[in-house]
Image (cartoon, rainbow, N blue to C red; front, side, top):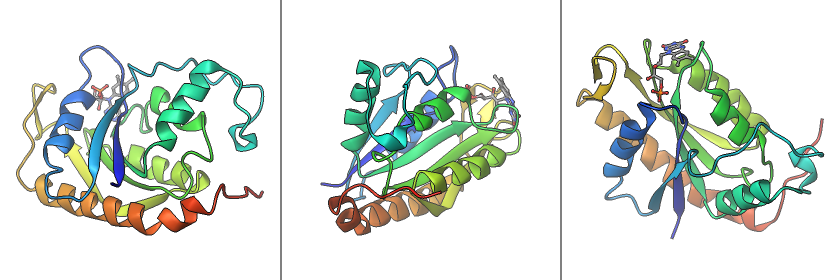
Length: 192
Ligand SMILES: Cc1cc2nc3c(=O)[nH]c(=O)nc-3n(C[C@H](O)[C@H](O)[C@H](O)COP(=O)(O)O)c2cc1C
């Protein structure tokens, strides 16, 4: 069974990422994959503290090894990202920076939220995904803090987003499957 992780990109108290992530999870029925929320609160990582770059694949810290073991168990991801200062949150970028091979040849789709739908965070994450040798799908969900949340905190998504979400989930699942032979072939060599 193809396994897709839904990464919550915020850990702050009162975060909106949790309700958005739950909404994603609630709309996964009908897709031939299993889905699981990956909560960065439960996998708390200090700011990157490995002596070697992740491309070396020699993780020393127990928290890095635990994170690597978790991420390697998934075939693809949906990243739920807030927009902080026109960028992804530091906690999300840090979690991505920690690993390398565990992200390679896996599909990723982005669900963002912000005053303008969080699209600036997603554009930056697409650059990061490229460097991590992930396949980012075109379909994306961009939720407005103004019209998809009441009082900027109660999540009430417009119905039209469900179509975008279904397209995203379909692409993430099919690309995750299609990339399985490459993952089985082993780690991807990183060049300059
Ligand atoms: C540090 C910080 C920076 C923010 N910067 C932006 C921004 O650049 N653009 C935007 O649309 N919203 C911005 N916001 C508002 C967030 O979109 C909103 O607070 C959202 O709920 C944050 O996600 P979270 O609740 O899951 O943490 C910012 C919020 C914080 C806390």
